[in-house]
Structure formats: C-alpha cells, structure tokens
Image 1 (cartoon, rainbow, N blue to C red):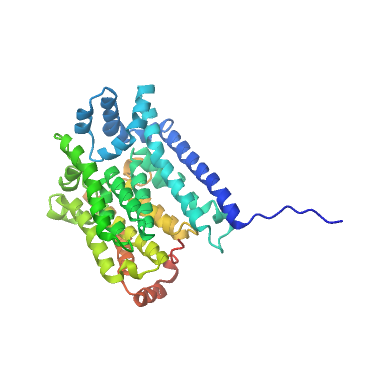
Image 2 (image 1 turned 135 degrees about the horizontal axis):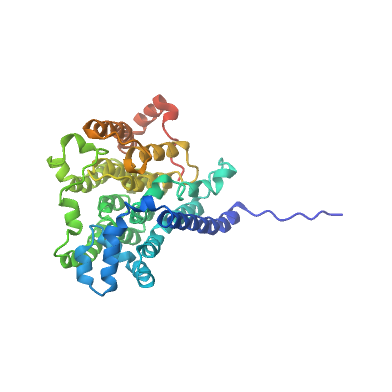
Length: 419
C-alpha cells in the first residue's frame, strides 16, 4: 500500500508566499511601536519635534491657510506636503496631535519592512543562512526592535526612514538601467528630506547608460518640486536655506567640525559641503569604475556601497547630527546584507545609538561641561572616522589593496555584501 506524502513546496514558491506575510508582520510591528511610543511613553514625547514643527502646520492647513502653513513649516516642508492627506485626516478626527502623528508617520514607517520584503523576494535568503535568518532576520533588523528606529519615531522624524528607503530603491533601479523611475524616486526623496540631494549624483552615476537624459530629468523634477514651494515660502527658510543657513543654535559634539567651533567656515557651510561631498564621491567613483563596465550585480553592490559612504559622510559632517541622522546610513547597510546580516551590523547600530542618543534619554550619562562634550566627540570620531576610511578604501581602492586590508583586520570587518 502506497503511503501518501504531502507535496513539497519549492523554495521559489515559499519565497513568494512568505514575502507578503513578512511585509505585513513588519508593518504591523512598526505601527504597534509607533502607538506604544506616542501614547503610553509620555516622557519620550516631551522631545517629539512633531508637536512643535509639524502639528502647527497641519492645524493651519486644516483651516485652509495654505500660504501661511508653508511659511511656518520647517525645512523639511516637502515631507509635510507629501504626508498632508494623512495628517489632515487625523486633525479632522481628533483635536490632539497623537492621531495626526500616527496617521502621517504610518506611510514612512511602512517603507522599511516593505523594502526588506522586496529585497528578500528579489534575491531570497542565502543558501547557508540558518532558519532563524531565512525569513525573520532581514526584517528583524528593519523593524522597531531597532533602538534607532524607536528613537526616530519618538523624536518625531519618521520622514528619515522614507527618504532612506527611496534613496536605496532609486540606486537599485538605477543600477538595473531604469533611469526614469530612479530619477523620480531620488527627487521625491530629496523633496521629502533635503539631505537626499547628496544621494542624487550616486543614482546618476550608477546608471549603465542615458546618464545625460537622467540628469536633465532629475533636475527638472527637483525644479518642479522645489521652485514653486520655495517661492511661496517668502518668510521661510526653504530647502536652500536649510543647506546654507548656518547652524544657528545647534552644534552637537558627535560630528567632525566640533573642534572648529560653530562659527568656523566649515561649520557654517557644512550642509553645502555635504552635498558637494556627494557629488565629488560620485564623480571619483565614476572615473575609477565606470558603471557601464560593471555587471548588473556589480553596479548594484558598488552603487549601494557608494551610497553608504555618502550617507555616512552626511552624518559626520553635519553639525546638527542627531540620532535619527544615522538611520539612512544604517538602512543602506541593512539593504546590502538583506540576505544574511552579520553581527557587525548589530554592533554598529548599538554603538551609534549609544554615542548619539541624547543624554536626557537616560541611555547614556550626561557628563556635562566642555570636557564631557569633548569626550563624546572623541568617542564618536573614533568610531566613524575609521568607518569612513574603510568604506572609502572599499569604494575607491583597488581590489588588491582591499584584500590586503581584509587579511590584516580579519573578523573585525564584516563579510562581503550578500545582496
């Protein structure tokens, strides 16, 4: 008598059926963390920038005062425009800020697990990955168990997640030759958060062809998005002001220019220098590698490594560097290792969290005074400056030099990206 056995599903079928489940679980986890952060944890919401920066804009918009809303909006006003339908819905239902914040932040938070699910469905888990990592690992790093994500939500800046995800997807689509989609995505990322302007040259140079057409397209798209709104913001700072308006009263120790002081030229023009650094890195990468000479997988891997370098430079060169500024860089790393994340990513995430989280959070001591600030500056630079050097060597150096460095440092460096 023949025994009946259940048919085995192929790995491809498992992958296609598992991805939506993972995406939904990830979105649900992030939304739950958003609710827990906003409603019960009142101590964290005392520093939520949404209350002072975005909530007044949505209240003004709900009264039909569009021009005034643009003028009082913060430098990331583009993000508030994109999220306005969700924020206005919350303002119409409840007079309190919590519901408006939850609804307007939800699309941004959903972007992270959707990115992880997309990368998993595209490539699948690595063959040597354990069951623990095969489907839960890639998303586990992108979900709200990550302390940087939690604090990003608590401080009221979920738009950082959306711009980072859009930049990653733009570079991936550009590496595959889909220039129009890539340019539109990177332009929306820059409109959502102006720091993404530094990533625009990266998305252009990784294209295998049609770079001139892509450059014109992204310039026109940025002009359509920024010029009308900037002209309407006669009393605001706009994106240009956010790049060139100096540092004002904000000057944190966890950045490169701490030793020069807030009135030094490099500190005042740090935001322009960040955008310039993105262009210089992209031009140097193009002169050394030429995307049209690389395989599609090579363009994808090298393009994301270049993006990681540019976003890491953005954090170390910004006098306003806060905990959520590290998030775009970390998301690029998670995307690079989506199939099999090494423990190095957990270590880097934990160290960046501890070195940039505000002292009033209670997660790190407040040593106070100039000596304590100098110690934090030294600790942060001891972590990030070697990371910048190693990433630059990997991105711009020859394969021979990188192999030599890997041989000397051994397990201190993560394995090659698995994307």
